[in-house]
Amino acid sequence: MALVETARDGIRWVFEVNRCGDGPPVLLLHGLLTDSRVWQPLRETLADRYTLISVDAPGHGGSPPRTANFTLEAETDALVGVLDALGVSGPVAWVGHSMGGMKAMRAALAQPDRVAALGLISCQPYEEPARTARPYLAMVETARTWGISADLAAAMGKLNFGPEFLASPAGQAWVAHFTGLAGDDFAATAHAVFHRTDISGRMAQVTVPALVLHGTEDIPIRIAVARSYVPLLPDARLVELPGCGHTPPCERPERTAELVGAFLDEVYAPTHATVTEYK
Image (cartoon, rainbow, N blue to C red):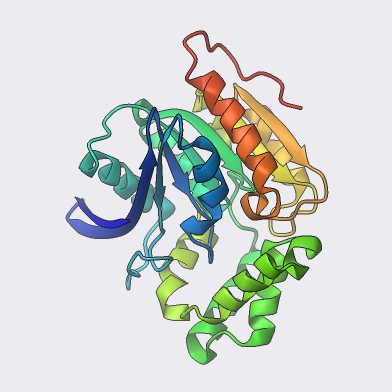
């Protein structure tokens, strides 16, 4: 792991980056409140044939927080700067969970020449509805003012994970992780997520192949949302994960790695035309 610095429009960004493996590049972007550890199963499965570049979001993992608010678009542009700093100048497969997938979508729109394919896990192109944005932002303010209590961490766990995984030692380890977070560290990143713009009307412009993975028991982003936006993408396939909550990389690590690996193998095959049907 290493800190990578980039400047975009005069603004300095610093990210912790983990790079491993050998082969075509794949950028891995985690969701809000977690960090790049969610990608460990993919690293173990895919590093033999892909260069895996995982990046911690501001205020997450080893990346320092940002004190000023920013947009998902600004951070996405900074991530392109990270790729430049790493010497990765060609198209990359962007695989993102939740917030990470939202950034991947924006990369495909803003800089399509830097995107080879999209792996969209538990994400959406729509804005956050006011009925959910308000309580989520209130949760952030509570964390900033009072810290993250055991009760608040438990609520975060229920939003991020299905009941089966949440009850497991791995799930409880993430809940314990939440209690150690500082609200000020992730507040700006949360602001970017919950104040995002609606880009659903531009999905027809995303012409790269896309694999969409979504748990049927996802609470923050219901499965109906995934079913509604996938038809807007010209070359996309939705795979529903029965009984899975919001975080398939943790809850269904083997299945997630299998599906993402098969998708990448096809994308990077010389004969790729469209996304095949994954079952």
